[in-house]
Image 1 (tube, helix red, strand yellow):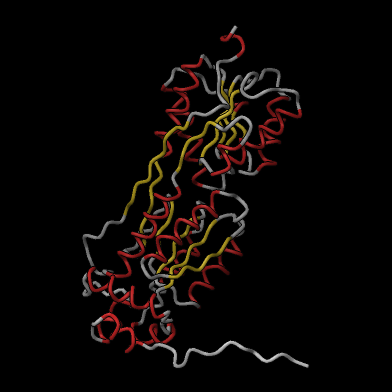
Image 2 (image 1 turned 180 degrees about the vertical axis):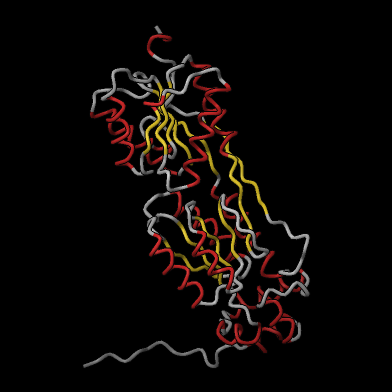
Length: 351
């Protein structure tokens, strides 16, 4: 015999009128608050959101879109969801967006241009208010489609000559120069670089900044010690093995990202080498996992929180004031060195 549900309904669900009454404001003020209108003061907005939470009121997002013409949805497209850097970036972006009344739509391209085209179409179908394209690759043709449809976009390290496109400039140079100085101070002068795939302009920028930092330190860049990898754990293993196959071997390795560096850890261990006693290793990104490796990874920090905030600020500015000729179009996010346990004096210097 089937059991009867014993839970009782609480009566009529709260509507916008109930929210207005609880907050002691007009229905129009509630509507403007939900739609993120700048006409509502912070004091009234706080009261309205408290009433919404207290009553467990669920705004009709579809109706809100029809009335305001805005979906209150922001898209974010990332390069590879399996790289911990990107889930951490998405989490930071979502926290900022949700706190300001937006939802987010996430897509991952897996470094495939065809998938990127599908991601862009998905964003258009959902009528997002803007898209943060954090793929760090060559995607101008697809991005033009978004801009031509009037969708505001923000790009990482990639500029489009269009008023609806903003750019986040990433200052890798500061962190990479600090990394090379750190290694030189420890006594290293034989330094290799495991680069990212040259299909990504961010990887090319990081490699160029490494070369510049080496010249600034008065050190030669050995061509054979600059190896293109693919920003994955396996890429780090392959890069290390390629270095081991050369007649000479460096005392330190700087990697284009943390995943590559962790792959180097694995390969060094399998080869019977110790980090940092036999080889010093530096990564780039400072993913959350970096401080939990053995030894903890010395790395160049690229703040996901700062990157997410810059992306959100750019999209929000374009969505709320699209015709402002003085709107900020470029946002700078810097890097810094975080010294942990994977770097030490080279064996010869230590002895």
